[in-house]
Image (cartoon, rainbow over all chains, first blue to last red; front, top):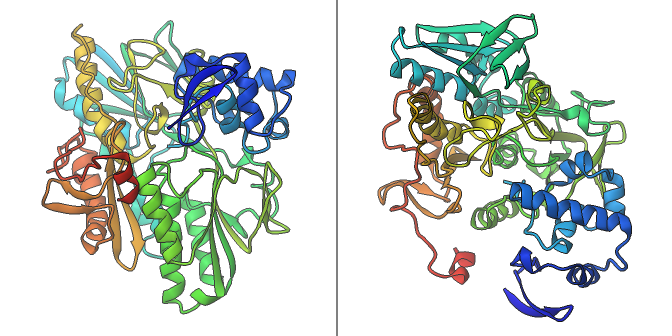
Length: 105
Length: 419
């Protein structure tokens, strides 16, 4: 757990860099989180995925896996990897300020 | 008279129907079980088939015969469920009306969802051991294998029995040593996860066991396509893993009728249900268990077994108009075969990850540690499965909620990483 300041807000990040409290998230924080992942700027398509991740998380309690994202987000898996080369589900979840998707059990 | 329809005659459907039949007299409820075929596979046995340690005919029995008298068994394909009219529509156009529906139709493999997986090389140099046919064909391929790169790949979670692909690696290591050609075989485990397993303490232990055996671990590899002709796995981010023989665990979906039944399932065809009562999110009179349910716990027979006890209790309470029992804690219990007649045991639930210690109490089978006793436990379990678990008898010493007193609980997060 580390304490840091993102976009002027004091936030807690877990050991993998995920925001501990999803309710602290703002669009400005998302921009900073994306920068830490080497994604700058966030395009409209990035935002589409990030917002989708958040709405899925608040509806279902967990973010979707890559396969579910490909089926439901309106962005194909190939494009998702172009947007988030280090792993769409994990990186988009991180930028969206939600926990790592737990589909993997 | 209550009408209870159980879809699926596998582990969950069979033990649920049998327990319900004991709970209700013939004059109180009709119980109907539907499955598309009459082959009940003891799925944990599939792991042993490729190594010649068992054979498909030894792990398959008729479904109908595992059901108690007084249960109506139908062999039929389900077309869809109409939640509004409380009717199951079968593919032969007949219908079954229900007061309570139990969804226990498991998970189906979808190899066709991965580009190239069922193309050239499928069942020649690319196999899966998750079906009796695949496991039997792989036995032949392994027997002919004289050296080269053997790759085991989990395409994406969730899969049934997430430890089985690791067990396959351990047994392959043992198998090639027995044949005296281990030095000619490169073994690689390729997973979409960021470690050998999902839960940190077990992931570390299992990752260490792969390393000890000289099995390479490739993580965060999301397979985009399989090229059987060229012999390579290609990830979505364009990494490649070459192979001479590939053992692939394809992605899983729920049964196809779920997708045809508006409101019943999620995007993969699994049925969302309450984590503790197993009542579906779709309707109060629909329950789901086992691999068919969308729950944050492993798809495994032990999970289904423990869920079954709570589910049957809750069907009774629902029919009596009483509040449900929210006591399922996510208990899972898995033997992990590690080769050389040894096995490991892990025991965990929603809250507690697999820890070292003993099961079920301070004296018992060692947890998260290889032992011959666990291997014997794993072998004995097949008998218990047919004779105790499916008929709905309680298995001695094994309870639906996770036992805690034999486990070594870490006192600090730091200690957890040292275990």
